[in-house]
Image 1 (cartoon, rainbow, N blue to C red):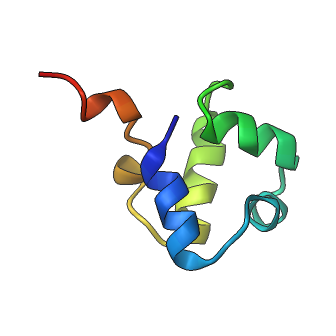
Image 2 (image 1 turned 135 degrees about the vertical axis):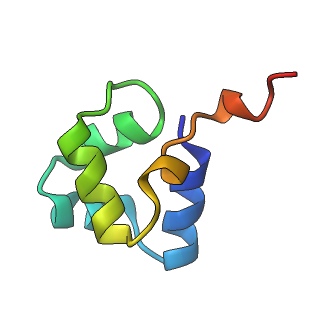
Image 3 (image 1 turned 30 degrees about the horizontal axis):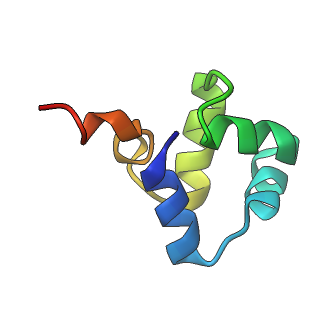
Length: 69
């Protein structure tokens, strides 16, 4: 799962279906990517970051990065 991506979508007030339309993929595919059930294609990753005008590395930090000690 990508919590930063979810947070950024919420802050922008953008729904997943709108982001999916803007980057040209199916909403179900985007949901699976966001929730960590589908591998992320580098092209899609770049499109998402561009549309959201956010840092690609930060957006796609997995949630377990913060829980490691």
